[in-house]
Length: 366
Image (cartoon, rainbow, N blue to C red; front, side, top):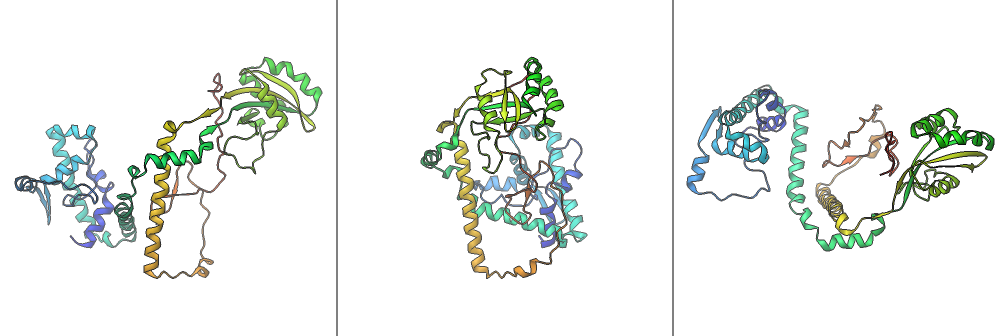
């Protein structure tokens, strides 16, 4: 196999094959037909007769032989649900023919010189990095390598992380005087959630909350949600005290003095304190420890590569590099195109920790 064709085959995975297949045809495999089993996969001991059977050629596309074994491997790579489709001879034929289409497209792409395309070569590098990480790190640092003792020790050292204090959710209407608050209090007490939000939008002088109907969101007795930054402004202490004194959802309290102004407070949500035990938190802890150890192993591996490669850096040349402003794509993580798949931080303001979305009409608390 030439280098150009190898490059094209890797790039074509999941793209060219999908375009070439009929609307209802099964997906093509994620590797060329003659490719060996994925690295790290357990070797299967086969008899000579079985090896000979799997070596039988279904199709010959130039110098590439698509064998019975390649077709079986393509089926085995699918989920159990999808594998059941191939009991239908027509479906099985579609899958086998998709391998032929793949090879035809790969040959055409190689003939057009895509093997030397910079984007193709970058994709190949990313695939090689992924395979290298799998072999050097993922086969060694597995989730199973995190012992029950490791999980228990982490839980004991970070027990406070798994305890959530009591929280309330409240809305308020901030008014400029006690007289204005007294005049609106009766109407606020008779209002349902929708009506209270309308009153807040109409009368509140709190510019931060009035557009969301006076919603203060969930907060603890500190005035902040769990995990919030100390730099974030808390809910006023008088409002916090008034909200925690309310017992039932929908109760209205006040007027409450807030600086030189006065506020009417409505309880819209309540959450009791919660402690997650080791049994509940165990899998999350195991996943966290695995990610930390995996990243540490990758960092150590790269550090060794750097030491042996004698890397030279010229930071002074970074200054003339120009970056056009780019709006981040909402909801999609940003990943380093030259890295190992870790997410990069997005620009823009992140939502506050523990922040809850506005509750729908008629549904309060949990």
